[in-house]
Length: 174
Length: 174
Image (cartoon, rainbow over all chains, first blue to last red; front, side, top):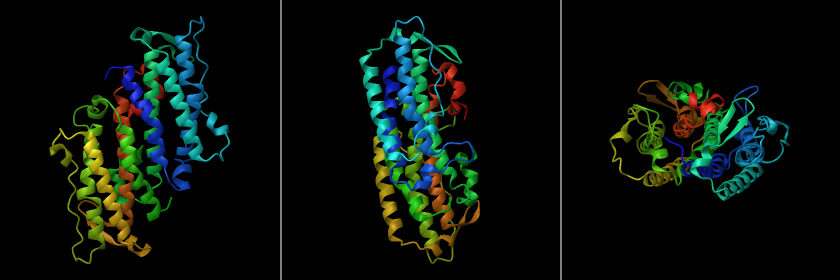
């Protein structure tokens, strides 16, 4: 499937409600349990997505489209959410994420990106030159990856409880 | 995490809206593309979930709770959706799934399942004896597995498009 801005935005627009419906009304264990030491709970993942909206994706898009000589991205702190106040209810994180995403997509639309802009580049701290197209694709895939992760972390809480069904449940093996 | 009927139902209740928000407003390619030969598209997965509501989970719960001597489950056709009319819009499948799930959860509530019922057994065509607790756990995990699958299938459509980000995107490697 070839990149089209419109189709990438379809994914990005859906994510806030996907997360809200996935975590709506769940008991604390579903939200706060993880997959073991040094792994993330659904709560941690939502916190990570909030930081991504604040400091990563849109910031990098602005850098790529700027006229500045220096198009280097600041490294993204993928663990910033771990230093945030852990008592913030998940509902508040989800609300924050939805607002940030909505504002970011409004800004993205206002940039009026043309086909030829998609090949403009910024400098990733590890990868070197990356294009705007790759960055926006990665933003959408990053959403989907974390939705899958949240589903997997929750599924794993019942690894023992499903008994012999583990055999059919590929998600429990990842 | 130990099984509690109430907490399993939290997951089962959320799934219809999760699927709707995940697939809402998407272009056909997101819905109909798969991961390659003999793999499922998001459309196929939703069709599979519809058949599960009709012929699998609740039917087996009824068998376990029946007073019948014979508590054998009929094998579940995991590919039934492939023989269904492929022109039915995904929106219709999602509506059907939501209604079926709602009815199934109403019936589940009406059964007034007690803690001691959770150890009652049925006979799975492959596994042999399985308990009601295992069956209901598997129902919830099955939902989460397919939500993760849909996210993965969609993510993979952009495997090429993310460029060097594939390195960080575990979802593209599964």
